[in-house]
Image 1: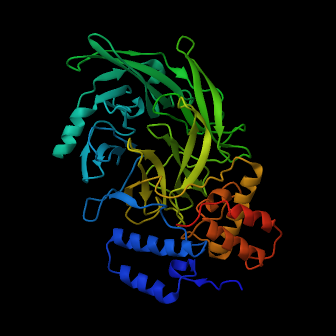
Image 2 (image 1 turned 120 degrees about the vertical axis):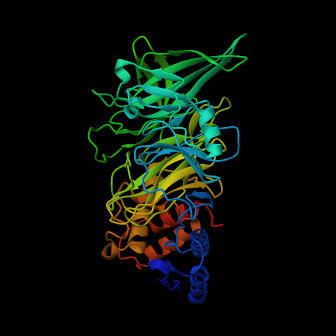
Image 3 (image 1 turned 60 degrees about the vertical axis):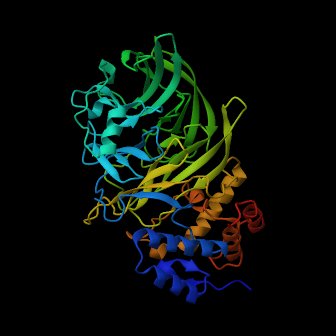
Length: 502
């Protein structure tokens, strides 16, 4: 006999006994925000273990840190992305912009200070410099600021927005570049000097949006650390193989790989076959201003901006529902859009080269339109932080943003990815069934999830564990979700290969 399900807490179907559900709701009624979230996640995990496929936890693992905390000054605006700041300590520190002002933010201690320029402050992977592209500086030059004085100021909770740059790059082809990612290509020690070559990838100029990289060789005095000289290469266009990129490419921390959306068809609408891909930079030619690349991975689904872990073992990115890719977010999400965070696990050979991927996780699940999690990035310790907005950007309510830190390896990986046509088809079927069961068409509105496009459906099903998947297929097979023809036996077999509930 099929298990009876009823509408439960917050409109989500549940098989948890009503008495237990009410007890959990009452117990969290007077809790703090963090405690209430923990109670809600515990409820969802109970449901998930019992096969309730509508009970998808808001986060796949414990939230290790969240700022601003209760009683702290709120963040009511975030311009574009935020990025980690490597340093010698254990605290989680990020750079972000709000109201066109850059900040350093210690997410561990809750300290926040102003730093120079208006947006896109990105550290070099070794934590020595903080870079700002020319689009966001007063004189339209790209700047490198020493990071150590900023970190000292952050420890004292003193603003450092008057700090002078260590190096200014003024080049005619780089006057209006923005949205950069940084890499450390090499580090060399000589008798009296220490050299580091940083590779920065930029988007945008006055004339074109084509991405380009510049290699900067910084030479420091070995004994004092004083900067002696900087040698920038000519700008080089990146990866002709990346077509119709829609402003998504990001470079790996070693400067060897680029993750980017790529489509064979021009335009900003979804096209069949468009997907997130990984490219390896196989050669650079500064004299001709070009690079040579090869495609290394086709993930098989569309996704927005990505970030590589510092050891090249993982890639994190956000998904978009209701608005294609959402490559730029300034001041939050509109009420027609949802974004969520995912992570992929790479396969590598004995020399560390990326050869494929063997696992996926959906780290967040958002169901309220205009509310989501986006622009995830790695800390050096392998943790991920992301931006979460609580209020749609087109709402009249006060805007609120949080930075959350999670551990991407704290929950099971889905090892059945989208690498075969059959697997991709099964994920699509499951996503469509999930939407029919958990977000019926008649309930979709401005306050609830918009409908899934066909290319979005597979990723919606990704958080399902094997028990939830089997329950969903059983309800579909018996007609509880409407009459339709699918290969239920194949779907049920596929469910058995998914991650088990924990």
